[in-house]
Length: 110
Length: 121
Image 1 (spheres, rainbow over the protein chains, first blue to last red):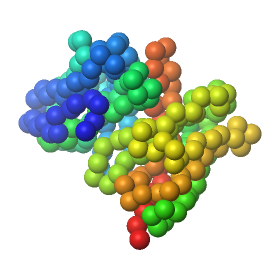
Image 2: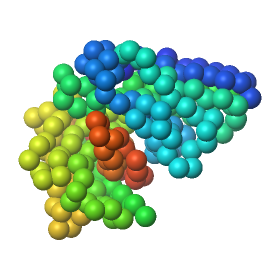
Image 3: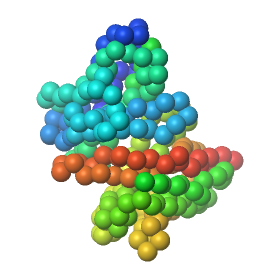
């Protein structure tokens, strides 16, 4: 059971928009700690897509965006492409655990 | 260019020990808090341990507390994870991602390929 809750799976057709939620508590996202998002393609290491809620590293397409509200955050992907099929994870900090916490991951099927 | 190379993984029996290494280059190693993150087969990511830049702070995930020890040797740009009393549930790919500070939290901006630890009799 992960501290941050994500839906196990989401799906969408090419060109559509999907969102992945990450729900936390008052000791992590709700406490104002940053939320970061990762994409993991099969057999590879994770790659950062969004850091500090809504910032994209250079090289990440603007089809990916992040937002937050209260104790939750979301990753939105527009213009879905087949290459977006991957696992997605959110990451934050938890003050009661004194450490980083990941969401359980969401498998995106395109 | 940041490079992170994890090594030391392998097959080990339950109850035995193993030491992982993380060799880094391409950034100012001694200035960074360092982390271990693992991923069990078919499962999600789990934070394992961290060590501050000066080595004064070490924190561990609940599942490894008391069994794993993190350390660093800045003269060699290398971090270690000593894993004792290994359990089958420690089976995972272990990563040592590079952390970047946002001003409020760390996030992991570069990752190596990881090293696989298999605990099995």
